[in-house]
Amino acid sequence: MNGLDTRTAVLMLAGAGATYIALLHPAAGTALLVGIAVVTLLHLLVK
Image 1: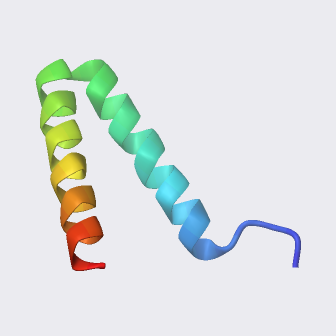
Image 2 (image 1 turned 180 degrees about the vertical axis):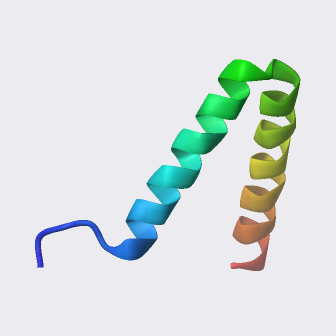
């Protein structure tokens, strides 16, 4: 099937929302970046 699956669409929407929040509120954007970094590191360590 050639198309976006639901997971990809949800992740793209979440990324767009996070980018919009970071644009409006830089402090919240910094917090989002730190949160994403921590979750990514935990994901890599558990893998």
